[in-house]
Image 1 (spheres, helix red, strand yellow):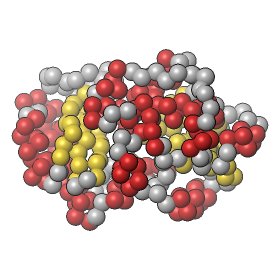
Image 2 (cartoon, rainbow, N blue to C red):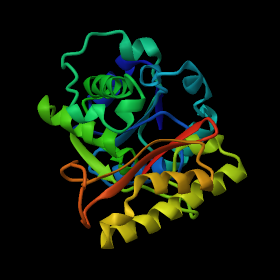
Image 3 (cartoon, rainbow, N blue to C red):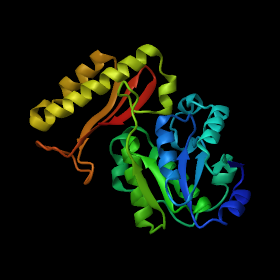
Image 4 (spheres, rainbow, N blue to C red):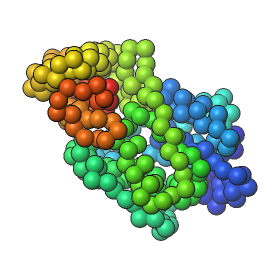
Length: 271
């Protein structure tokens, strides 16, 4: 595994290859990231993983500072996975140049997390666009846990006719049902139990809604979630995952999208 901290040396190395499979991360690696990397390694191209905690996608300084980081542990894990390249850029390396492509921000960016995290998706798409221009990957591997983010990145790549294919990868969950996330490292044992109970409640609720839409009674659901230990609920909505239109009647093709807090830790999921 070769480690690069500046784009010039990285490009000299990777442009010798016929293509790159790219897995962007913010570190705090977990089973979800490992699943993406293993899938990437099955492609015909060499795998490049990035670790960069992007300040431009955080609306609160405290949230940026408290984001879990353990670079030594991450490097150790990536060496075991035998990836080809690791890119750990500085802020200047990513933001110190003018991009060729302007970010395309689909109107869906104003829904769900976009309502509650001002500037978040602009920050995500900006950094992904910059990584793509630096690396020029053939494939980019993204998880379905961040489904809205995945959708918006795909739209940007399609609209700007960027020659990079998005590979969608399934959400990886812990044995207790919680979607793997770096933020889970900030949860204590009791909070993990709360998150697990919320997942199982929503999983059961989805089954009921499939049979009878009247079970989607939002006020009762929010009350139940708060009784289970959610401190605050930003949103709970149901969308068809292909069309991204809200479901207003009985349907089998939808996911429940949620963002909620346990104390000051914000978790998202789609079930």
